[in-house]
Length: 112
Length: 109
Image (cartoon, each protein chain N blue to C red):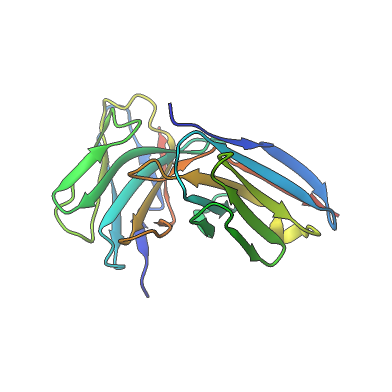
């Protein structure tokens, strides 16, 4: 089945640790996105990538890093510089042309 | 600043009633997207509106777009409990979807 897979579903991070959230898609989509959702809030854009080996900062990129070495994969690293990382993280992808973005099932990150 | 404002943010309505959710956006985008999110879940695409005057319907939900007024509406007809969810609208300021804060809808008996 075609889709977007995020892993893990739940992730716990200790203070000062870096953690990496995985996002893989087999939809052959060029564009991929990372959003953060806090309780009762909309989605805020962290990073996006339109093509392989290229990515751009979104509205809240500080404390996060990404890579796009393969078309299928767009991992997000939450670094220790992100002071308030507890949130629901959603990865999305989008094909060429005017289409909606399709979302993965999300990763819930909690700082312990 | 790019803004997408939804109104209301919280809505409790009785089964069988009608209601409209409003989405105002600040860009000159001619595209508008509606998504649904169930508690603890991801986002599911509902509608893609691609031009001024676009209207789309799926079951008890109907979405429309007025690009001149920078306004989209999501109309709920004869609400049922299964429609309880959070509804997001998003415009497209050129590179990614820009979301509103969402409207939490609760349909009660």
